[in-house]
Image 1 (tube, rainbow, N blue to C red):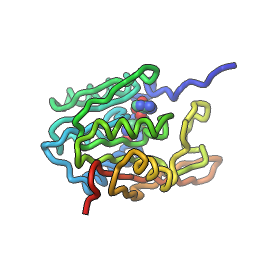
Image 2: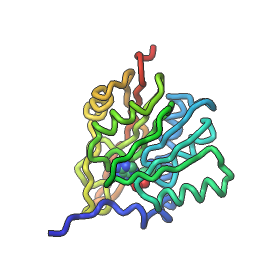
Image 3: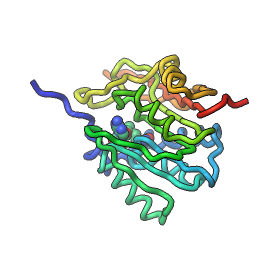
Image 4: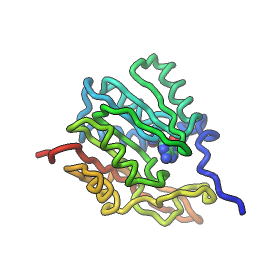
Length: 215
Ligand SMILES: C[S@@+](CC[C@H](N)C(=O)[O-])C[C@H]1O[C@@H](n2cnc3c(N)ncnc32)[C@H](O)[C@@H]1O
């Protein structure tokens, strides 16, 4: 029996930024996170599943320090290249080997993740780990697909652990891990053609806080 392999981000990395709707979605994520969390120069930001850094580099100018984490070396290489070309000095990358125990850095004020959580098998475990890495008052911002029928990804052979998340499900993960002031808003709808039909895939941003609920 052939076991399907994970989506191959390494080979897609060099072309990743060439799709305008991807860039538009990342910009919408950045705008919404900036509006909701008001990033500050004193903050340490971690982008989980940063990819080529479309979201990371959109937020980088507004925070003090950035850590970009990803399980694809190819994606991180593209991000490092862009950072070098732009003379960015407050960014470091961290490769996550999904087959081995890994640990995220501590002291994070703003933890963001865009279009990655549907690739993560153990979301509950990761959410607890996120919270343990964050400072009191820190904000967790997760942008991902609303529950879909499994047709979003072009490569139907690669296993995707979650076909998006209902609002109840994603907010449940936040509450279960102990985040407070949890709220969700729709930030964009991705449109694709499937079987010669126009299909809509809404993307939501959920934000939660570490510590007492905000006013
Ligand atoms: C759809 S891309 C999104 C990239 C970027 N956030 C963006 O908005 O352009 C998903 C990224 O998550 C990474 N990834 C997938 N599963 C992961 C996991 N379990 N842990 C960390 N990164 C993961 C992939 O390598 C890929 O770069």
